[in-house]
Amino acid sequence: QVQLVESGGGLVQAGGSLRLSCSASGRTFSSRVMGWFRQAPGKGREFVAAVSRSAGSTYYADSVKGRFTISRDNANETVYLQMNSLKPEDTAVYYCASRPYEGGSVHYVGSYDYWGQGTQVTVSS
Image (cartoon, rainbow, N blue to C red; front, side):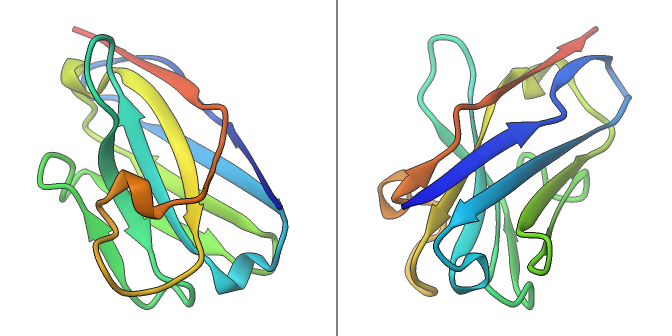
């Protein structure tokens, strides 16, 4: 069992920044790929970013590339999402997720077996 708890969401003006955190407990954090997804009202859950077990590889959706940075601290079992130059279209509930293996498509929602409860990010224009 893996428990994931997100924090750091809030209301920010367009162009601003937020840093999301996701604290994990349970199975060995360093053995799992970690990802961030988001879901806007009336839309499906979409991939935002992912980081490999050792943080040697990172992956981003085209919509956030160059603005968001994913990182992880295996010693403290935490994954972060630094979000800069935020846009109103970034408004969504952001979810942290975990999966047990490298390889395959990190963009695929169904490949993640544990999810956090989500944190709301609202970007005003």
